[in-house]
Image (tube, rainbow, N blue to C red; front, side, top):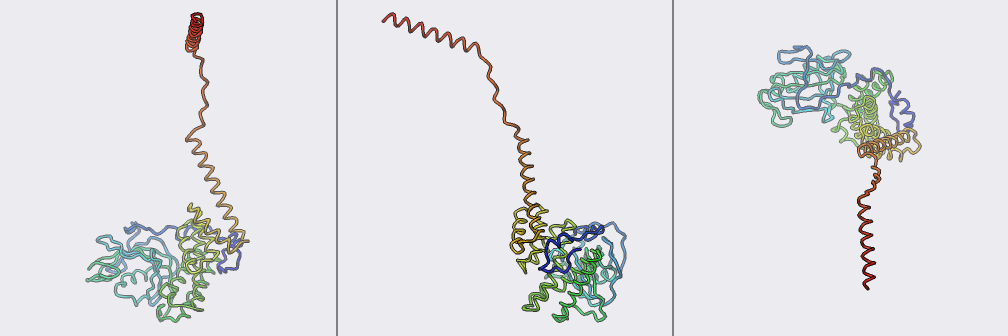
Length: 365
């Protein structure tokens, strides 16, 4: 099993030998989120949640639905229904949204109704009337939403905290936020060990949500170190999952976040190098792996990956060599020239004429 604690002093060799292996791994974010500009087409049954809110399930969730005052963490994309213009995308921004059910901002009322009828891990398509969105006047700042615009949301409930008081992150002390994130990390680790990867990924993502950029920018000294000790392992474990799922771009992104804080993080370099190698980004992969070897020269997993990269390059070179050889074909052999008897006869005749002419000239002299 993956070393979920992600301690820097643990050998990558041990880590590699214990990568996550589970038959149910394909359900973890199995469908990559659509990156197109248009809302996804969904054939599922339409559920009427409110006079102005309908829902269609894209991916089923699990467990119970959140209750009032639960602190929910969501990702979503939003389009105006009339123009199909996408005006917000938290997946692209890597910025989950937090909302406390029953205490949403006015423009989030429709989302609140939708989320209160979803399960953890569920992804759905919501259609929200303008009355429960940005209203009659719309929004002319960020996001830019025209007046009286009905909205389509592709939304995923990452997970939620059941709290009676509905205390948002902004009202927590630094210690409370780090502690809540660490609890999520440990819950993720426990699920990781049970090979419940979908639930584990959700816990890690919620832990990361507690450690958002707005929060991290305010930290320094021991508090920043404490926060990174929770945040970075979550990114690294998510990268390991993405590699297993062959979602290499996502794995690279998670590792790059860690390396922005800790450029010598061996596991981040190793996993990013591995993901880049799988995408055929040979030079970038070699650079990451060589850096990782610099910081962990005796690590067997890094050495093995570098050998694999070298063998892969050799195989590609040999394949290209054979391909070009087949295209150009073998070098043509020179054909033996046939004897031209007519030319030989004329050469003999001219030679004889020259000899006779020479003899005649000598007699005249």
